[in-house]
Image (cartoon, rainbow, N blue to C red; front, side, top):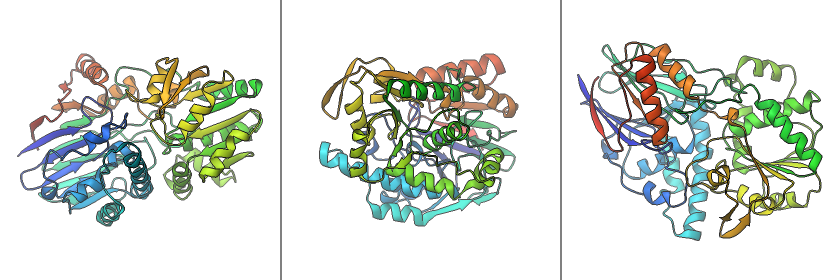
Length: 453
Protein backbone atom coordinates (compact mmCIF):
# COMPACT_ATOMS: atom_id res chain seq x y z
CA UNK A 1 0.00 0.00 0.00
CA UNK A 2 1.01 3.61 -0.53
CA UNK A 3 0.70 6.30 2.14
CA UNK A 4 1.47 10.00 2.17
CA UNK A 5 3.87 11.47 4.72
CA UNK A 6 3.83 15.23 5.30
CA UNK A 7 6.48 17.32 7.06
CA UNK A 8 4.58 20.28 8.47
CA UNK A 9 6.79 21.25 11.41
CA UNK A 10 10.20 20.53 12.85
CA UNK A 11 11.79 20.83 9.41
CA UNK A 12 14.70 23.24 9.02
CA UNK A 13 14.17 24.03 12.69
CA UNK A 14 14.57 22.25 16.01
CA UNK A 15 11.11 23.18 17.26
CA UNK A 16 7.50 22.85 16.08
CA UNK A 17 7.43 19.08 15.45
CA UNK A 18 4.36 18.15 13.39
CA UNK A 19 4.19 15.15 11.03
CA UNK A 20 1.15 13.91 9.10
CA UNK A 21 0.52 10.42 7.74
CA UNK A 22 -2.38 9.59 5.40
CA UNK A 23 -2.74 5.82 5.08
CA UNK A 24 -5.63 6.02 2.64
CA UNK A 25 -8.30 5.15 5.16
CA UNK A 26 -7.01 7.13 8.13
CA UNK A 27 -5.02 10.23 8.99
CA UNK A 28 -2.48 10.18 11.82
CA UNK A 29 -0.56 13.15 13.20
CA UNK A 30 2.61 12.64 15.23
CA UNK A 31 3.33 15.55 17.61
CA UNK A 32 1.84 19.01 17.41
CA UNK A 33 4.38 21.41 18.85
CA UNK A 34 5.10 25.10 19.16
CA UNK A 35 7.70 26.89 17.10
CA UNK A 36 9.95 28.49 19.73
CA UNK A 37 12.85 30.89 20.00
CA UNK A 38 11.28 34.35 19.75
CA UNK A 39 7.95 35.80 20.83
CA UNK A 40 7.17 36.68 17.22
CA UNK A 41 7.01 32.97 16.48
CA UNK A 42 3.50 33.04 17.95
CA UNK A 43 2.34 34.55 14.65
CA UNK A 44 3.58 31.39 12.92
CA UNK A 45 1.97 29.16 15.54
CA UNK A 46 -1.37 30.89 14.98
CA UNK A 47 -1.48 29.96 11.29
CA UNK A 48 -3.88 27.30 10.04
CA UNK A 49 -2.67 23.72 9.97
CA UNK A 50 -1.56 22.41 6.59
CA UNK A 51 -4.09 19.56 6.94
CA UNK A 52 -7.72 19.48 8.00
CA UNK A 53 -7.86 18.81 11.77
CA UNK A 54 -11.39 17.44 11.41
CA UNK A 55 -10.11 14.69 9.11
CA UNK A 56 -7.44 13.45 11.52
CA UNK A 57 -8.34 10.25 13.39
CA UNK A 58 -5.38 9.96 15.73
CA UNK A 59 -2.74 12.15 17.34
CA UNK A 60 0.34 10.36 18.74
CA UNK A 61 2.59 12.29 21.13
CA UNK A 62 6.25 11.36 21.68
CA UNK A 63 6.81 13.49 24.79
CA UNK A 64 5.67 16.56 26.72
CA UNK A 65 8.07 19.30 25.69
CA UNK A 66 6.25 22.36 24.35
CA UNK A 67 7.80 22.04 20.90
CA UNK A 68 6.03 18.66 20.62
CA UNK A 69 2.68 19.34 22.39
CA UNK A 70 2.23 23.13 22.44
CA UNK A 71 -0.38 23.30 19.66
CA UNK A 72 -2.43 20.26 20.69
CA UNK A 73 -5.23 22.41 22.19
CA UNK A 74 -5.22 24.52 19.00
CA UNK A 75 -5.68 21.32 16.99
CA UNK A 76 -8.73 20.57 19.14
CA UNK A 77 -10.00 24.14 18.84
CA UNK A 78 -9.71 23.85 15.05
CA UNK A 79 -11.87 20.73 14.91
CA UNK A 80 -9.86 17.64 15.87
CA UNK A 81 -12.06 15.19 17.79
CA UNK A 82 -10.15 11.92 17.42
CA UNK A 83 -8.08 10.09 20.01
CA UNK A 84 -4.75 11.20 21.48
CA UNK A 85 -2.22 8.66 22.73
CA UNK A 86 0.99 8.92 24.75
CA UNK A 87 2.59 7.31 27.78
CA UNK A 88 1.00 8.12 31.15
CA UNK A 89 3.82 10.44 32.35
CA UNK A 90 3.56 12.39 29.09
CA UNK A 91 -0.17 12.96 29.65
CA UNK A 92 0.40 14.05 33.26
CA UNK A 93 3.19 16.41 32.24
CA UNK A 94 1.18 17.77 29.32
CA UNK A 95 -1.53 18.89 31.73
CA UNK A 96 0.80 21.23 33.65
CA UNK A 97 2.89 22.23 30.61
CA UNK A 98 -0.12 23.31 28.53
CA UNK A 99 -1.71 25.28 31.34
CA UNK A 100 1.56 27.08 31.96
CA UNK A 101 1.91 27.83 28.24
CA UNK A 102 -1.60 29.27 28.23
CA UNK A 103 -0.73 31.64 31.10
CA UNK A 104 2.38 32.78 29.22
CA UNK A 105 0.38 33.34 26.03
CA UNK A 106 -2.18 35.47 27.88
CA UNK A 107 0.62 37.52 29.45
CA UNK A 108 2.38 38.05 26.11
CA UNK A 109 -0.92 38.90 24.43
CA UNK A 110 -1.60 41.61 26.98
CA UNK A 111 1.94 42.97 26.75
CA UNK A 112 2.79 42.56 23.06
CA UNK A 113 -0.52 41.89 21.34
CA UNK A 114 0.57 38.40 20.25
CA UNK A 115 -2.17 35.84 19.55
CA UNK A 116 -3.60 33.44 22.13
CA UNK A 117 -3.85 30.07 20.38
CA UNK A 118 -6.41 28.43 22.68
CA UNK A 119 -8.10 28.72 26.06
CA UNK A 120 -8.36 26.46 29.09
CA UNK A 121 -11.53 24.81 27.76
CA UNK A 122 -9.49 23.60 24.77
CA UNK A 123 -6.89 22.14 27.14
CA UNK A 124 -9.64 20.36 29.08
CA UNK A 125 -11.09 18.96 25.86
CA UNK A 126 -7.67 17.78 24.66
CA UNK A 127 -7.09 15.95 27.94
CA UNK A 128 -10.54 14.37 27.67
CA UNK A 129 -9.44 12.88 24.33
CA UNK A 130 -6.03 11.86 25.70
CA UNK A 131 -5.34 8.18 26.45
CA UNK A 132 -2.35 6.55 28.13
CA UNK A 133 -0.42 3.53 26.89
CA UNK A 134 2.50 1.59 28.35
CA UNK A 135 5.86 1.11 26.70
CA UNK A 136 5.88 -1.88 24.30
CA UNK A 137 2.05 -2.24 24.47
CA UNK A 138 0.59 -2.79 20.96
CA UNK A 139 -2.04 -0.19 20.15
CA UNK A 140 -4.57 -0.86 17.38
CA UNK A 141 -5.38 2.16 15.21
CA UNK A 142 -7.78 2.59 12.26
CA UNK A 143 -6.99 1.23 8.79
CA UNK A 144 -4.99 -1.75 10.07
CA UNK A 145 -2.20 0.27 11.70
CA UNK A 146 -0.54 -0.81 14.94
CA UNK A 147 1.46 1.60 17.12
CA UNK A 148 4.08 0.76 19.72
CA UNK A 149 5.79 3.22 22.07
CA UNK A 150 9.41 2.56 23.10
CA UNK A 151 11.40 4.31 25.83
CA UNK A 152 13.70 6.80 24.11
CA UNK A 153 15.39 8.13 27.27
CA UNK A 154 14.90 11.86 26.62
CA UNK A 155 12.55 12.96 29.42
CA UNK A 156 10.15 11.17 31.76
CA UNK A 157 7.74 9.16 29.60
CA UNK A 158 9.38 10.05 26.28
CA UNK A 159 9.01 7.58 23.45
CA UNK A 160 9.80 6.74 19.90
CA UNK A 161 6.73 5.48 18.06
CA UNK A 162 6.73 2.59 15.60
CA UNK A 163 3.77 2.34 13.23
CA UNK A 164 3.25 -0.99 11.48
CA UNK A 165 0.85 -2.20 8.80
CA UNK A 166 1.11 -5.60 7.15
CA UNK A 167 4.89 -6.09 6.77
CA UNK A 168 5.82 -2.38 6.64
CA UNK A 169 6.83 -0.05 9.45
CA UNK A 170 7.82 3.56 10.04
CA UNK A 171 9.47 4.93 13.17
CA UNK A 172 9.11 8.46 14.51
CA UNK A 173 12.07 8.92 16.85
CA UNK A 174 10.83 11.91 18.81
CA UNK A 175 13.80 13.37 20.66
CA UNK A 176 16.48 10.75 21.31
CA UNK A 177 18.04 10.82 24.76
CA UNK A 178 21.68 11.54 25.50
CA UNK A 179 23.67 8.72 27.12
CA UNK A 180 24.15 8.60 30.02
CA UNK A 181 21.30 10.60 31.54
CA UNK A 182 21.23 11.38 35.27
CA UNK A 183 17.74 9.97 35.81
CA UNK A 184 16.74 7.88 32.79
CA UNK A 185 17.75 4.71 30.99
CA UNK A 186 19.41 4.69 27.58
CA UNK A 187 17.08 4.73 24.57
CA UNK A 188 15.55 1.47 23.39
CA UNK A 189 16.56 1.29 19.73
CA UNK A 190 13.80 0.26 17.28
CA UNK A 191 14.93 -2.30 14.70
CA UNK A 192 13.83 -3.64 11.35
CA UNK A 193 11.84 -0.62 10.16
CA UNK A 194 11.38 0.54 6.59
CA UNK A 195 11.31 4.27 7.24
CA UNK A 196 12.62 6.51 10.01
CA UNK A 197 11.75 10.13 10.83
CA UNK A 198 14.50 11.21 13.20
CA UNK A 199 15.72 14.25 15.10
CA UNK A 200 19.04 16.01 14.44
CA UNK A 201 19.41 18.74 17.08
CA UNK A 202 23.06 17.83 17.56
CA UNK A 203 23.52 16.15 14.20
CA UNK A 204 26.79 17.98 13.57
CA UNK A 205 28.29 18.00 17.09
CA UNK A 206 29.56 15.73 19.84
CA UNK A 207 28.94 16.17 23.55
CA UNK A 208 32.52 16.38 24.73
CA UNK A 209 31.71 16.79 28.42
CA UNK A 210 29.29 14.00 29.35
CA UNK A 211 31.74 12.26 31.69
CA UNK A 212 33.00 15.55 33.08
CA UNK A 213 29.67 17.33 33.57
CA UNK A 214 29.36 16.64 37.32
CA UNK A 215 32.94 17.80 37.90
CA UNK A 216 32.28 20.93 35.82
CA UNK A 217 29.12 21.67 37.79
CA UNK A 218 31.07 21.23 41.01
CA UNK A 219 33.75 23.62 39.68
CA UNK A 220 31.21 26.37 38.94
CA UNK A 221 29.56 25.96 42.35
CA UNK A 222 32.93 26.12 44.13
CA UNK A 223 33.89 29.16 42.07
CA UNK A 224 30.61 30.83 43.04
CA UNK A 225 31.26 30.12 46.71
CA UNK A 226 34.78 31.54 46.41
CA UNK A 227 33.52 34.74 44.74
CA UNK A 228 30.47 34.97 47.04
CA UNK A 229 28.59 35.40 43.80
CA UNK A 230 25.49 34.03 42.11
CA UNK A 231 25.28 30.99 39.88
CA UNK A 232 22.29 31.40 37.56
CA UNK A 233 21.10 28.33 35.68
CA UNK A 234 18.38 28.92 33.05
CA UNK A 235 16.97 25.41 33.17
CA UNK A 236 14.20 23.78 31.22
CA UNK A 237 11.43 23.06 33.71
CA UNK A 238 11.01 19.54 32.40
CA UNK A 239 13.88 17.02 32.89
CA UNK A 240 16.85 19.39 32.95
CA UNK A 241 15.77 20.94 36.24
CA UNK A 242 15.17 17.53 37.84
CA UNK A 243 18.55 16.31 36.59
CA UNK A 244 20.29 19.38 38.02
CA UNK A 245 18.59 18.96 41.41
CA UNK A 246 19.64 15.31 41.45
CA UNK A 247 23.26 16.15 40.67
CA UNK A 248 23.46 18.97 43.24
CA UNK A 249 21.83 16.65 45.79
CA UNK A 250 24.54 14.05 45.15
CA UNK A 251 27.32 16.63 45.48
CA UNK A 252 25.90 17.87 48.77
CA UNK A 253 25.05 14.44 50.19
CA UNK A 254 28.51 13.11 49.36
CA UNK A 255 30.22 16.10 50.97
CA UNK A 256 31.81 17.17 47.69
CA UNK A 257 30.40 20.69 48.18
CA UNK A 258 29.06 22.55 51.18
CA UNK A 259 25.34 23.37 51.04
CA UNK A 260 24.63 26.91 49.86
CA UNK A 261 21.26 28.64 49.39
CA UNK A 262 19.72 27.15 46.25
CA UNK A 263 16.47 28.43 44.82
CA UNK A 264 14.23 26.56 42.40
CA UNK A 265 12.45 29.64 41.12
CA UNK A 266 9.86 28.21 38.77
CA UNK A 267 6.29 27.18 39.66
CA UNK A 268 6.22 25.00 36.55
CA UNK A 269 9.47 23.22 37.43
CA UNK A 270 8.19 22.66 40.96
CA UNK A 271 4.97 21.09 39.61
CA UNK A 272 6.95 18.91 37.20
CA UNK A 273 9.27 17.79 40.01
CA UNK A 274 6.23 16.55 41.96
CA UNK A 275 5.19 14.48 38.92
CA UNK A 276 8.68 12.94 38.89
CA UNK A 277 8.38 12.14 42.60
CA UNK A 278 5.17 10.21 41.94
CA UNK A 279 6.55 8.18 39.01
CA UNK A 280 9.91 6.89 40.16
CA UNK A 281 9.19 3.55 38.43
CA UNK A 282 10.14 5.29 35.16
CA UNK A 283 13.61 6.21 36.46
CA UNK A 284 16.72 4.10 35.95
CA UNK A 285 17.42 1.29 38.40
CA UNK A 286 20.33 2.95 40.20
CA UNK A 287 18.22 6.01 40.94
CA UNK A 288 15.34 3.88 42.22
CA UNK A 289 17.76 2.09 44.55
CA UNK A 290 19.08 5.42 45.84
CA UNK A 291 15.51 6.48 46.63
CA UNK A 292 14.74 3.13 48.26
CA UNK A 293 17.74 3.66 50.55
CA UNK A 294 16.12 6.81 51.91
CA UNK A 295 17.56 9.62 49.78
CA UNK A 296 15.04 12.25 48.65
CA UNK A 297 16.84 12.97 45.40
CA UNK A 298 15.02 16.28 44.87
CA UNK A 299 15.81 17.76 48.28
CA UNK A 300 18.94 18.79 50.15
CA UNK A 301 19.92 21.34 52.84
CA UNK A 302 19.31 25.02 51.93
CA UNK A 303 17.17 24.18 48.87
CA UNK A 304 14.05 26.34 48.64
CA UNK A 305 11.15 26.12 46.21
CA UNK A 306 9.94 29.67 45.47
CA UNK A 307 6.39 29.31 44.25
CA UNK A 308 5.17 32.89 44.50
CA UNK A 309 6.38 36.06 42.78
CA UNK A 310 6.90 37.57 46.23
CA UNK A 311 9.24 34.73 47.21
CA UNK A 312 11.07 35.14 43.92
CA UNK A 313 11.64 38.84 44.59
CA UNK A 314 13.22 38.03 47.95
CA UNK A 315 16.02 36.02 46.30
CA UNK A 316 17.81 39.27 45.47
CA UNK A 317 18.07 40.06 49.18
CA UNK A 318 19.95 36.84 49.91
CA UNK A 319 23.55 37.82 50.67
CA UNK A 320 26.56 35.73 49.78
CA UNK A 321 26.92 32.79 47.42
CA UNK A 322 23.74 31.26 46.02
CA UNK A 323 22.38 29.22 43.15
CA UNK A 324 19.27 30.24 41.23
CA UNK A 325 17.63 27.70 38.91
CA UNK A 326 14.84 29.34 36.93
CA UNK A 327 12.93 28.92 33.68
CA UNK A 328 12.90 29.25 30.84
CA UNK A 329 15.88 27.30 29.60
CA UNK A 330 16.44 29.52 26.54
CA UNK A 331 15.73 32.74 28.48
CA UNK A 332 12.85 33.67 26.18
CA UNK A 333 10.45 34.20 29.08
CA UNK A 334 9.77 33.45 32.72
CA UNK A 335 11.49 34.46 35.95
CA UNK A 336 14.98 33.91 34.57
CA UNK A 337 14.73 37.26 32.78
CA UNK A 338 14.44 39.16 36.05
CA UNK A 339 17.49 37.40 37.45
CA UNK A 340 19.46 38.12 34.27
CA UNK A 341 18.52 41.80 34.49
CA UNK A 342 19.68 41.84 38.11
CA UNK A 343 22.88 39.79 37.93
CA UNK A 344 24.37 39.85 34.40
CA UNK A 345 26.10 43.18 35.07
CA UNK A 346 27.84 41.69 38.13
CA UNK A 347 31.28 40.16 37.41
CA UNK A 348 30.84 37.76 40.35
CA UNK A 349 27.92 36.13 38.53
CA UNK A 350 28.18 32.99 36.42
CA UNK A 351 25.39 32.23 33.96
CA UNK A 352 25.52 28.51 33.26
CA UNK A 353 23.86 27.26 30.06
CA UNK A 354 23.04 23.57 30.22
CA UNK A 355 20.83 22.99 27.18
CA UNK A 356 20.15 23.83 23.57
CA UNK A 357 19.66 27.54 22.85
CA UNK A 358 17.44 28.27 19.85
CA UNK A 359 18.44 30.86 17.27
CA UNK A 360 17.02 34.25 18.26
CA UNK A 361 16.65 33.46 21.97
CA UNK A 362 18.34 35.51 24.70
CA UNK A 363 20.20 32.37 25.72
CA UNK A 364 21.61 31.91 22.23
CA UNK A 365 22.80 35.52 22.08
CA UNK A 366 24.53 35.11 25.43
CA UNK A 367 26.07 31.82 24.30
CA UNK A 368 27.36 33.56 21.16
CA UNK A 369 29.16 36.21 23.23
CA UNK A 370 26.81 39.20 23.32
CA UNK A 371 28.33 42.01 25.41
CA UNK A 372 25.00 43.74 25.88
CA UNK A 373 21.39 42.99 25.05
CA UNK A 374 17.86 44.06 25.82
CA UNK A 375 15.87 41.96 28.26
CA UNK A 376 12.20 42.90 28.37
CA UNK A 377 13.12 46.29 26.91
CA UNK A 378 15.89 47.01 29.41
CA UNK A 379 19.45 47.26 28.14
CA UNK A 380 21.82 45.06 30.14
CA UNK A 381 25.60 45.01 29.89
CA UNK A 382 27.00 41.50 30.17
CA UNK A 383 29.84 41.43 32.70
CA UNK A 384 29.01 38.02 34.11
CA UNK A 385 30.90 34.89 33.14
CA UNK A 386 28.94 32.88 30.57
CA UNK A 387 29.64 29.17 30.88
CA UNK A 388 28.32 26.20 28.95
CA UNK A 389 28.21 22.53 29.90
CA UNK A 390 27.19 20.70 26.75
CA UNK A 391 27.23 17.28 28.36
CA UNK A 392 23.96 18.08 30.14
CA UNK A 393 22.03 18.01 26.90
CA UNK A 394 19.00 15.74 26.87
CA UNK A 395 19.58 15.08 23.16
CA UNK A 396 21.79 12.44 21.59
CA UNK A 397 24.86 13.83 19.88
CA UNK A 398 26.12 13.22 16.35
CA UNK A 399 27.74 9.86 17.05
CA UNK A 400 24.82 8.60 19.13
CA UNK A 401 22.39 9.55 16.34
CA UNK A 402 24.46 7.65 13.78
CA UNK A 403 24.61 4.68 16.14
CA UNK A 404 20.82 4.81 16.62
CA UNK A 405 20.44 4.22 12.87
CA UNK A 406 23.33 1.75 12.67
CA UNK A 407 21.73 -0.49 15.30
CA UNK A 408 18.21 -0.48 13.92
CA UNK A 409 18.12 0.73 10.33
CA UNK A 410 19.75 -2.10 8.43
CA UNK A 411 16.76 -2.60 6.13
CA UNK A 412 15.57 1.01 6.04
CA UNK A 413 14.45 2.24 2.64
CA UNK A 414 14.74 5.86 3.71
CA UNK A 415 15.67 7.99 6.70
CA UNK A 416 14.12 11.45 6.96
CA UNK A 417 16.33 13.78 9.02
CA UNK A 418 14.29 16.46 10.78
CA UNK A 419 14.05 18.50 14.01
CA UNK A 420 17.38 20.28 13.68
CA UNK A 421 18.83 23.50 12.33
CA UNK A 422 19.52 23.16 8.61
CA UNK A 423 23.27 22.71 8.97
CA UNK A 424 22.84 20.01 11.63
CA UNK A 425 20.31 18.10 9.57
CA UNK A 426 22.35 18.26 6.37
CA UNK A 427 25.54 17.25 8.19
CA UNK A 428 23.80 14.21 9.67
CA UNK A 429 22.30 13.31 6.28
CA UNK A 430 25.76 13.20 4.73
CA UNK A 431 27.20 11.25 7.63
CA UNK A 432 24.47 8.61 7.42
CA UNK A 433 25.09 8.28 3.70
CA UNK A 434 28.87 8.13 3.99
CA UNK A 435 29.21 5.94 7.09
CA UNK A 436 26.20 3.64 6.78
CA UNK A 437 25.21 3.82 3.11
CA UNK A 438 21.70 4.85 4.19
CA UNK A 439 19.31 6.65 1.87
CA UNK A 440 19.01 9.71 4.11
CA UNK A 441 17.35 12.99 3.14
CA UNK A 442 16.42 16.26 4.82
CA UNK A 443 12.86 17.08 3.73
CA UNK A 444 11.67 20.60 3.06
CA UNK A 445 9.04 22.38 5.11
CA UNK A 446 5.60 21.40 3.84
CA UNK A 447 6.95 18.58 1.67
CA UNK A 448 4.71 15.53 1.18
CA UNK A 449 6.23 12.24 0.04
CA UNK A 450 4.76 8.85 -0.84
CA UNK A 451 5.99 5.81 1.08
CA UNK A 452 5.24 2.11 0.82
CA UNK A 453 3.19 1.68 3.96
